[in-house]
Image (tube, rainbow, N blue to C red; front, side, top):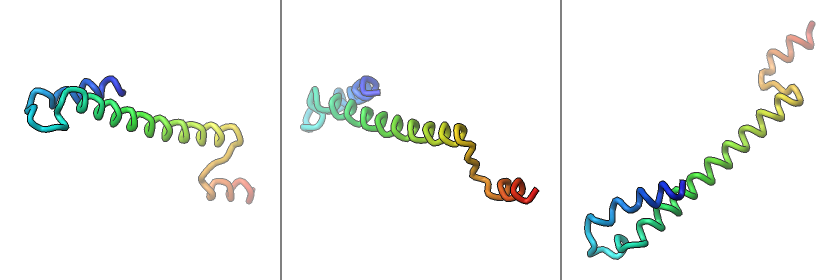
Length: 74
């Protein structure tokens, strides 16, 4: 994702060189950093969700309390 961010950040370079944030390495570095951060957060969220799903499957935990109550009543 960081490489894509650097590539995407290079789009603003030819627009106007008069601004300091559009000088050569700055947009590419900012784009790479931004997309790296987004990728890291998405990866963390996905890993937490997958771990929770795996634990629920492994231990047979179901979020539906009504279903559990029906089983206990029978």
